[in-house]
Image (cartoon, rainbow, N blue to C red; front, side, top):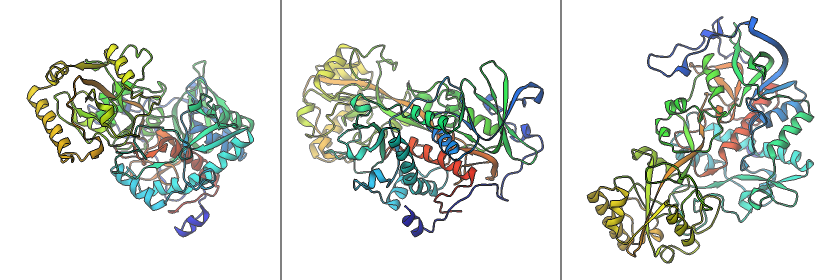
Length: 562
């Protein structure tokens, strides 16, 4: 990484205020402009909490808002470096561990020959995200520093009796994207950068032996001197007359206000905004169509709101971390039970014919995981679509294709039969019965159906260019149809920031003392979560939180633009 850094003209970066930083009015409560008429209420700053209402004041070096997957590594580094760090957390405990972390060219990857080209990654990811709401350099920043971050993390976890294992080194299929399988879409370069936390014997979540890695992080930070305050949501940031963010006011378990004065900096890592549906829809109206939410109900955009209330700027739009094939009932509601089946209906998540509620085809159905969510949300009235196939599907589809069971689906005839019994999938003797039952417009659907079979017979999808391996006529009764929606785990999009993770105001100037990372931060994603970069949310969020602390404390890291 050092060699690569030198090749790209990178230099060390130290923290501390620069001359080119934002200055605020003397009254920080008025730093944010009043919202326009008709705008949602969350854009209106609340009255500042008076000093007379403060029950306790705590002085420290750093305050981290959020003890989740990004706040925890930040607390680890801050405490390890000798800083007096306090972490305020809305929930009753630290954030639950998720699937993985992610990075590039770390020791655990390179020793197995798993290397990634910097230019290929940066340019490919820029393209698939429709251009990020920031700078391409943000991807380079993550690429350059993720190796050192993973190496630092690996050393700590090794000492605690755990190991880190690159997903690319395992025979484990993590998503329904078809990578390395016959008929997979070649549209984008895929980067399987996930790194799993594993037991000493190699067991991890997929073997039924997961590591509570956020718990390991919280314990390490506490051992090094970090202080955690649970059931203590941050409610307001404090910005002085010189424009510096000097601390945060939180509400403790007794309902009293506690003011945390941070002499070096405040890091916002409070999560996303998916639990505030008004806020979420304001930044991406398509996400209003989401039916299945797998979200943390504490993630109500608290950090984003607090930042905006003192003058910070927000991304123009957010994207969702989407899962494309969650089964729904005829009326678009979620099943009350899956009765031992998976939440993706069997075969419905394969690259079969997919149409909207009118019966109109939507896309090349073999596009990578998450991609099918976008046309469903932007091209259909209800955010749902139907998958349609026939009883000879298994014989027709390529051997070694997507027919692998995982935690989302079991693509077997047995699973299909269970779904039919549960009313999630429907079975018909004729295609006309299928069209009537699903409520399609007869003319639209029959034209779509005839065109699809015509293209299958020709051996080339001239409408969407799906891989010919998946272009097989639907002609063997009985026929199947299953409706599905997109589900979401979180939003991506937040406060605008620079390459030092400093929050920017509406003139693009850094607000001194205020940093942001994880799903609270913006300036990284476009209007789609990049399905070709697996683990990017956790991976870049953790790394950038780690870099924020480095910047606050004046520690060196690889940076091309300073």
